[in-house]
Length: 173
Image 1 (tube, rainbow, N blue to C red):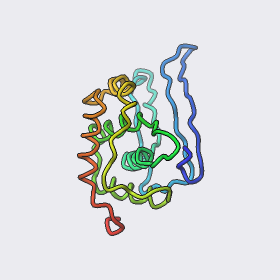
Image 2 (image 1 turned 180 degrees about the vertical axis):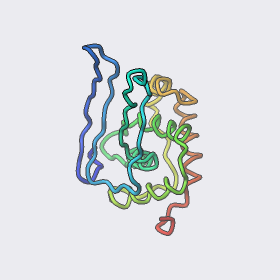
Image 3 (image 1 turned 90 degrees about the vertical axis):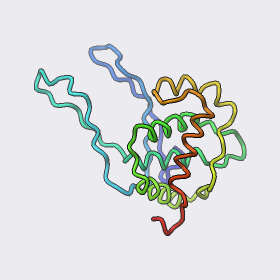
């Protein structure tokens, strides 16, 4: 979370009920990023309707913003090491395939994220992922349920989407 202007952190979350583990995940928390639109309201499953308990509601940054932050991390030009953000490729393909992303909203979010963070420029072309991702990618892709477990095919999906949201220039905001 070093890219977030105000810093941030990654927190491990374990969801338990009566001592039984139901889920385990990481929660990214960043501070200082510009958010163009208000939060999305995510409504959980209505599993406790029989007890007249409403489904849980969580606030989340908009999907376009999620995509913008992930493409920013994916495209960061590391000089001292290889990019290790393979999970971001999985997440971006998931957003592309199931997120019902609005192209104009994504374009605006990408422009604002890169402008606000000021760490590197928006690339006109995306570089393919490092070859080292090929070994870990299939398991993450399968777990996420995206259409391919092949890192090269996932990159093609990302590249095709990226080409739809270009040209990215200040006049697009």
